Image 1: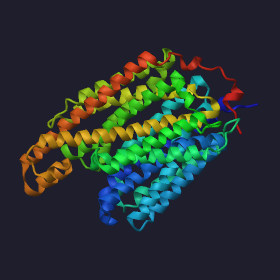
Image 2: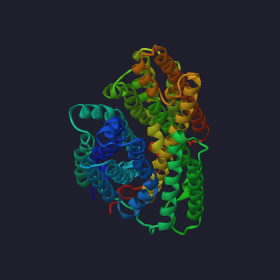
Image 3: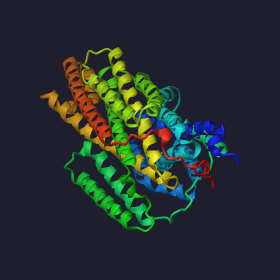
Image 4: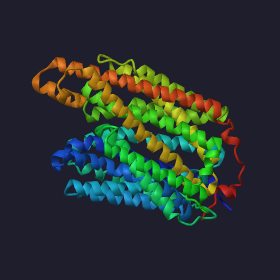
Length: 504
């Protein structure tokens, strides 16, 4: 019998997977470019704009865990196709939206699609690729995710310059539909051989708990960490997730198997991926603001100037897979996190007068380090997962990475704001709200001293943020070196090909 893992079609199927993650990847950043246009054309206030962004994030984070488990039960290919169709349909709703409320609703539906696609695109890889090929497949999928980050501002800037605001959502439709056809034709169906019953209580607890926790995290920078709404969200989310964990431990058929964390490769692979994501999210949080407000680049220019970071990911991801095969998994993960820390520490030396050549250099180094670490970290996770739990297990890892990234942005946002305000000293209160506000005031009044002070204050804040990210990466490297087992990917589990290619 011909098997999935022996068919050359598996590499074309991987193209379908890359298209799926690319769909989600560039949509995340394309919206940031369009917010000023949406504010003007839809008469949207700051609260509306915040919810246009957060509606996606909240739904996405809340549904990752149950969607991974549902894929294991009902079929990962089937759910992938549903996710792509939902993402395309929600994008069309956004295109024809007449007000901010309709855009918010469409973004929430897109969050459902993203929550389906994110864990299941990785969960199907063990079905299509044997252990010795899986690292290469993961590196290509990682590069697909990475290329979406700068594509958002580049594509968004071009579309907004030549078309109307709805065009930023139109672009999702053909990409998602091409991916849908490719998945339908090329990706094999797979599901658990012993499907569990649907754990509605676990799904409700995890979804509501994650939504409340992430809501508290994303509201904290604007409202303050002591705000009643923030504290309520954080506390309620933590309590519900604790109840969820207790319920899952006692359930006869839990939605996710928390015993997976007893497996060192899964636990430390997940930890490494989360710390790497924290560092990457930190750079992506601070860099666009620096490029736009300090250097004066427009939206399109910001996207183009992020390309060295993505080039680094493109170099690091396949290199991590190769090094892991030649040595042991912990070597490229620890080395990658350390290299990323070097890049970020170098970035902390950036000042107001630094040329872009210097910035591009440390972006390239930082991106290469993160790419070097993320591919073998994900491979370690997938290699530790039972085939029947690939969806739910991957969802745990992706959820922790997303929540860790959101928490990182919130903490780093608060840190940036505190340092920026402190450095500005006696400047007008309005100028202390953000670097963009200060530059706008300085431009309107001709106060060049304020502009220089604001740029210097922001660069100081950026330096501290990059050092914090570097420190997190160094800690991650040390933990991985100490605790991650050293099994080689090619020597892991000699499952039969029939087991690897279990097709429904």
